[in-house]
Length: 214
Image 1 (cartoon, rainbow, N blue to C red):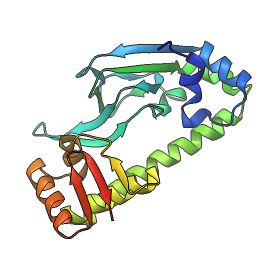
Image 2 (image 1 turned 45 degrees about the vertical axis):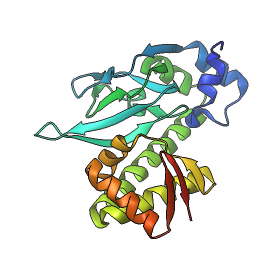
Image 3 (image 1 turned 60 degrees about the vertical axis):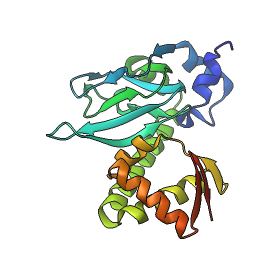
């Protein structure tokens, strides 16, 4: 399938509502469809934050490592997701790691080019603030989820949130169970037990990664 630079930029929530001319201008200053094979580390805490990424195809996990080298997933990036938004206005190293969990194609926009366009299209700055606010809210929500709830309640709350986002009770789990366990701060074995307990309580049904929330 032929890649559309226009559609890649248009798919990012930060650019929704812009005119076709503005989208076209963004497409012209973007680097398109760079391929990152599964397992590629896109950035690490020592990497300079210099461009915003748009996930065109594939999936990326953003995570931290504790002093023992154990991974804690902060969030997952899927097609249409953006990351490193702060790069558009500041230059500093990343704080986290990002890794492609499957073959991933990414479009990116450098800070210098973007700032030049913001001067002409102020709506971009407002959209960026909204996107940063959404990311902060999501991280705060996840912190509250893992701090205040038991593993069973964490899993159920997460599944209910995915169900609401998809606006349907039946959906495919958007991440592998190994990544979900890291995201929820539990072991894979604990996650498996909680899936079984929720199913026994008839709160959900599970068939591999196919989930139904009742």
